[in-house]
Image (tube, rainbow, N blue to C red; front, side, top):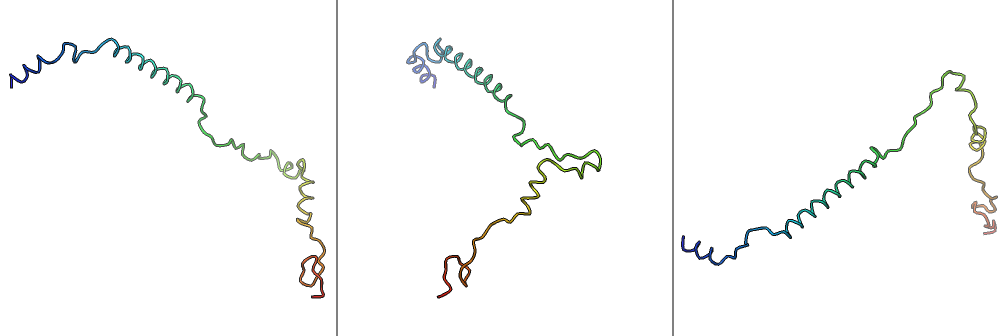
Amino acid sequence: MRQVSAVLAQQLPEDVGKSGPLGLLLTVLLLIAVFLLVRSMTTHLKRVPASFDPVDPGQRVPDDPAELFEPRPGQQVLDDLRKAPLAIEPPRDGEDGRPGSSPER
C-alpha cells in the first residue's frame, strides 16, 4: 500500500489541489454579483403591494333616517329606465307570429 501512494505522489505535479488567483477572482466576482442581485430584488419586493385585492370602500351608512329618503343624483333616470320596456318588437304580420310571413300559406 505504501508503494502505491509513493508512486502516486511522484506522478502528481506540485500545484494539484491548490487554488490559483484566477479561481479566487472568479469567486469574488460571483459573490459581488449575488450581493447586487439580492439588493435589487429586495428593493423590487418592497414596491409590491401587500394585497392585490381591490379596495372596497364598503357601504355608506347614513347619519340619520332622513338621508334614507333623500333622492340620490341620477335616481330619476334609473327609475325611468327600469320602467321602460326592455325591447321593442316590430309588428307581427302572419298567423305564426314571424314578421314578413304571409297568412296565405
